[in-house]
Length: 438
Ligand code: URA
Image 1 (cartoon, protein in one colour):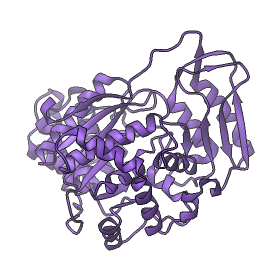
Image 2: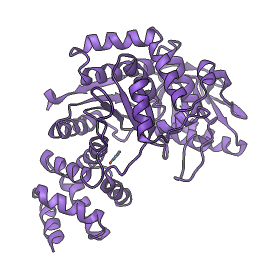
Image 3: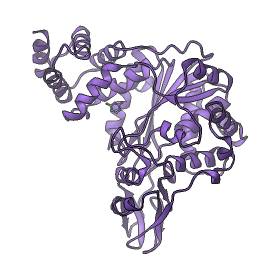
Image 4: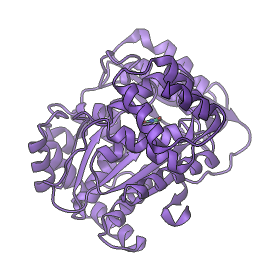
């Protein structure tokens, strides 16, 4: 009966109390509410929205459905970083290494890839021997000695979100700002960090397709962080093209190493430095962004960040020789160029399709059970704004399975638009949202 009243309230676009929300989340997690009633509630929320108070209550209920990680064994202020996901997004290990080199601990639990979007732990597992599965004592010890450790998700964090997300996925209720915000923030808060940095991606390879909606989502998440007394900053960053040059697992690790060894100067380096500077700021290392940025630059250019990355890989069982000499990574059996069909400027990417092409080649998972081919992926030769001649390679496809090449090539060619006008440059970082912006 109570659920019926609650559904009636949200249907009429009235505000739910914190108790209403806690009841629905708890009862659904314990299988006391059927999927059809929870689906109806989620759809009313997707249509009629929730205000920041309701969204914070939803987040709290989902946090309380499981464990809250205790990171007190790690010395210092712990800042977590979350990316809303994209294609070629390989920032976390680089950012973690830079921040650790500045003396701020980084204890990061990362996810796996699913569909077109890559996952940090799959990328790190492409380093022979690297384990993402560590007991928490070992995880804490590595953070305390090396300064940075990246492992897979452990513990029973926000199980309500897992169950509700599964239902949203099949009821067309994923796209709802309060539902996305509470889903992301419940996992971050349950992760136990003191402060949170959010990288909210926007564009053709992201969940949020326009900047205005991304800013709205970021503001809700920054507000939720505040209601849990965890300082939260969000950067709204561009995902209209794959980030950097490589998409895949070991291919992305090779690019991370190039940035850490100061051999790569583009957007990936710029974004990693900006994210790292914000993490230092949140950790209270320095309270002005210029000094934080200068410390990060110094950590990168001096090679200290590379050294931290190398130490982390070694501490987690990884083979250091491939970090010192990335040419030792296994290569794909087939490395095939994709030729431009016409001459002109690269005007845009349908970035999601680039991610799909990489997944088809074997670098991602079509289902949770799929096995990853660590040699698979795409190296981009031409980026947005470059000129290309008909027949010139736009990219190379890497795979161990010859049968996958044709489909991936079709997807990739379909993802690239070539035209006669030079496109306007796009910013890499659109906005920085802090609690002062609410
Ligand atoms: N990522 C999440 O964790 N939750 C959402 O709802 C959307 C993206």
